[in-house]
Image 1 (tube, rainbow, N blue to C red):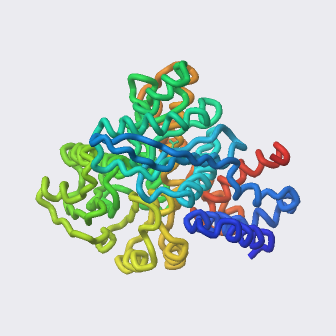
Image 2: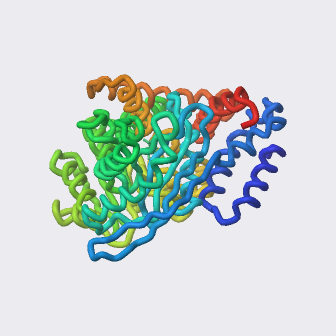
Image 3: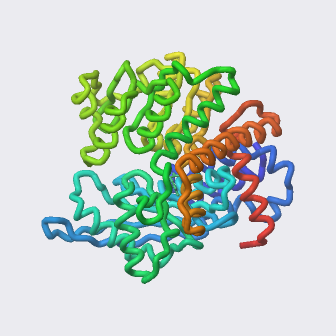
Length: 448
Ligand code: GLU
């Protein structure tokens, strides 16, 4: 291992002892950069890696809101403005009980590379709160969003930092957040948030974009392997917006997603989540706020396996689309033993590093989330363009651009790894390709 990378890793560990998720992603990314760091001794002189792993700014704030029973509640809000070398900070807001500083920093760091990969001018940021939206009334969600924005508004703007959705933050929450931002700012700046409704500046295809983009990326991988998506069986986790987009596009292209999962267990639908009724029902399940996968099995009379993960089901392609670190060594071994050929990460960092390297060593084709799920934020970038042009593009135009972006991300990642002598290594390739643009911009902009 390169001495400079080693030193930065050690320093990062010392400086952030209580942030395991953040250290995990830093380790994974820096491990890929050896060749390029050796080719550029000027990076070390400029302290480039030390600067790259330190967020430009971390904002933590109190969020006070009253529930329907009149009880006062306090949550913690975050916005991590990680890197603005190539554009305004951009990245989602996550509302979930597992949110803490480590999770926010890992997501902000990943976002910096992901956004760079899209080739659009967006820096990396992430935010959210440890607020749990499950089981909350609509009025409670609105009051929470308003309270959250009452602090956040002073840190964001169309040219500063542009948040969007993530786990627990969908179209409804973005609406409430935007309403409050507009009220406080006294100006109609709809470029401040993405993932908006169509009536106030949202983009067609944004809700579908992450899942569609993931399948477009899968198609590129299959093409590289002289294989075809038609007839493929996909084992997937999660049942949120991203999972819905995956199932929808897979069905259109003649593949079938046979599982979905939630905190309660997983459903196995051997016919695939392919009909419009089933796909629509996924959206209903998410909107219900029940956070329960079993509802799908009850509705369609398929098998539900309580308390288990879907990885015991055999399939050609595995797509974890729930949350971080759901694939550890045990699940990775199961996936390998099932004869899976393609392991396509979708959720941000769904795999522990040991499990990730194990699957690569075993010869599976492994694709990293920061490339696979980049279609979401890329389409947010397209939404920003439409807002600044004061125009709304046709669905077909947005979809075509999304498709092109995903084709390019795959090609750029494959090429970057190849150039470093790493072969068809999409994991290292995404890190290398994402790093290059950010590194060039940071070097050009001096010591900031
Ligand atoms: N939260 C999504 C992500 O992880 C989307 C971010 C955005 O659209 O800004 O990339």
